Length: 354
Ligand SMILES: Cc1cc2nc3c(=O)[nH]c(=O)nc-3n(C[C@H](O)[C@H](O)[C@H](O)COP(=O)(O)OP(=O)(O)OC[C@H]3O[C@@H](n4cnc5c(N)ncnc54)[C@H](O)[C@@H]3O)c2cc1C
Image 1 (cartoon, rainbow, N blue to C red):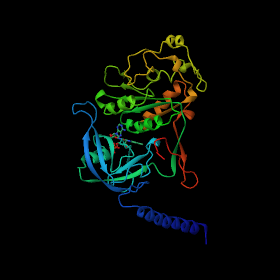
Image 2 (cartoon, rainbow, N blue to C red):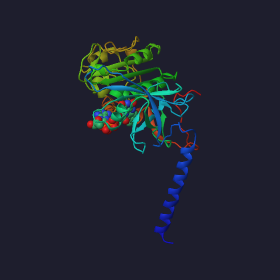
Image 3 (cartoon, rainbow, N blue to C red):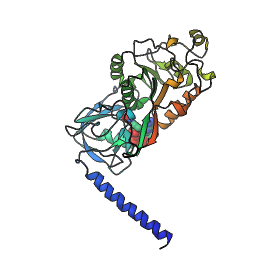
């Protein structure tokens, strides 16, 4: 037997094994169990709500609620929202599909929500938009795939940068981080085009209220102005304004590995690039942009960052963080690692209740 035949036989065996495994995997549980790895099953849309005002300048954002069996929740289906798990929506249930981060409490039984920005001619967002209440949609999850996991890195202070609809992912991450008593502060910058895109302000305010000063939110608008919000796209200057305690005003002139953990107030005020602005910060703590309390400036080694948005937006955000002195290789709150259930089980986030 020549080498070519052996290769063909191996490929044939792998193909058969894959289909046996696939049939077994799909037969597990009830037909209403969600399955990962792009194996889509249909779930009923039970409600639909528009979250942005009709007169808003941006694209509409709608909340879609899907039914789960009464006793099932996303958590019972294996979702760990603190690790950025998502569902995939497929138009025809045959692979592919787009990722959406559920926004409802993962422990809520019987249903879950997706908040989706509807793009003109958007293949999947348009399909969801056209789905009527009572109709079904092909969903799979948790994503990404069981053999890739995210390893969470422990931080004392967490900086989150959400671009537009990327807030759906970061809200759950913020909740998860706040559940860890070792995390002293979580600060979220939400970058929006228009103030009317701000569909989650109330929920974030509630989180701030319940956080005992550990959680704060700051907004920046790129095409609009609103009292108390920063203006402009994410830049090194804007990051300094938004995260005065996490990004010292000396960062740009410092080496990325050894920033000064504590700076004197005099030095902060000396920096010409630092502009005091009246920023909307949804908390009552000392962590304000217009009067940074230098005693709360922290060591870069204690800070981890996460950005959510398009690939390009995330790339730009991490590049900007490098410009202000953070080293990308060591600042990501989550690191992708291979997981294999028996050998390298994935570690859960603080969001997972044992
Ligand atoms: C991990 C993860 C979680 C996500 N969670 C959510 C979520 O909770 N809610 C949500 O609404 N989206 C979320 N997304 C984005 C989502 O997966 C789709 O990319 C988005 O809905 C567009 O898909 P579409 O098929 O409707 O548009 P497409 O058919 O791919 O594109 C249609 C048009 O929209 C434009 N477009 C597409 N995507 C974007 C974009 N991001 N920004 C600007 N223009 C765009 C395209 O340029 C094109 O003109 C998430 C993405 C990832 C990777």
